[in-house]
Structures are given as structure tokens and as C-alpha cells.
Image (cartoon, rainbow, N blue to C red; front, side, top):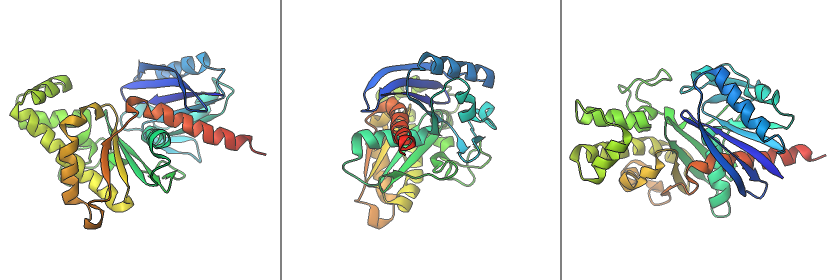
Length: 299
């Protein structure tokens, strides 16, 4: 039994076919269209090409009202606001459609394939176009009638940067790709770098680039510390498009976290890079399909 698994990001759509025993048969990426008409055309093309699959699992970058099939807020793809994704996709394919926040799906994927037999509580933080996350509590995804755990929108500076959500100082404004580049530009006024240039400079010992990653580590720790204090996870995994840079910030983030978390939790968690890299979301979509499709088949 195969499932079509789609992970919609602010920059790319990742999708693939995954079996019910979590074997990845095919995997592709395409740029995310930047208007609703083209977006639906892309999704229609993907779903109709793989109509032989048993169900569609899809992750989206935003907050969703599951009870009313309504996208409430997608800060990095605002053309999705007010859309009804399940109903729209159901027009293209006869199979069941199951949707969940993209970072929540990444959390399910990482937990199901790498941690399920070992721990009960895990946090998954995604760093990329935005900052997202999912929480596994007592072996289950922390969710509700609407999307839960908007990890990028905890405030780390009440007088800080303006966020797309309307607040000041959200973690996303510091630890997304645009956030770290802004930090670099503020550290070295007049610098207009891109992420590859920043990495090159840091790896060659440039003091401004290294300071940028030091600040990034402190910003990230400030946000994650609050999640740890609330949920006491055994592990925190870092995924998303920026996670491949973990060698430049993860150790410092861990040291900063140990200074910030509630004293009882300081030696009770591990901070690690995700193991599934950019495929965590599609694996999570498969896990979601497997659970809900099988539930739907029960008498």
C-alpha cells in the first residue's frame, strides 16, 4: 500500500511516494508557486500523476482549522489564507486527503522513524524560510481542533524585529534564513551577504560571520528554552533547510540552553540534528496517512 506525501514549504514543495512500511519509493522537489492559481495547478499535477496511491498526506506552512477545513493563517504563503485545502485537493483525486502543519508532520516523521521505541517526549524545530516546530508528548503529536505549537512565534525580544504575524521580536525574525542574514547585516553594516557567502566566511574564521552564528545560537536557545520548560522533552531535534549548518551553531546553542532552562531539566535533554534531513515532512505525511487511513477502514 502506497501513500502520496506532499510537504509544502515557503520555498519548495517536496513530495514522494512512501509505502505503509515507510519505504521511500520516489522523491521530488519543485519550487513553491507564489499565487493560488499556480499553486492549485501544481498540486493537481502532482496528485493526478500519483492517483494510484491509497491516500494523500499533505503538510502546509501555517495554522489550520481542521473542524471547518479552513486555512487561518499562512504567514509565508499568504495567498493560502482562507483556502480550504482538503476540499480543493479532493476535487483532483478520489482518495482520502489528510492534512497537518508541515512542521508537525516533520516531527511525526522524525519520531516515527528514529525515536519511537526509545523516548516519549520530543521536540522538533524546523529552521528555514520560517521557524516551525512540532511536539511529541507521551508518544502522540500535540495538536487540537486547530494547529498547535507555533514554535516560531514565541517572543524573545519584546522590542525586537517586526514579524509577519504582527508581533515584535518573534523567534522566526531571528532564526529563519532571512533572520540570520539580517543579523549578519546588522553585525557588519553595509554587508549584503547571502547564506552561502555567510557560511564560507564563517568556515574561514571571519569574525563578523562567527559573531553572527554566536548570536544565532543565543537567539535559538532563548526560544527553545521556553519549550523545554513547558514540555520537558528527552530530545530536541533540529531540522529544516538550515539544519545542515548545525556544525556552526548546535554546540553553542546547547551550552546556552543549559544556562537558560529550568534547573531541574538541565541534564535531562539532548539537542541533536534531525536524522531525516529534508525528508522528515514527507515521512510524517506517510505516518499520518497510515494512521488515519487504517482508522478509516475499521468497522
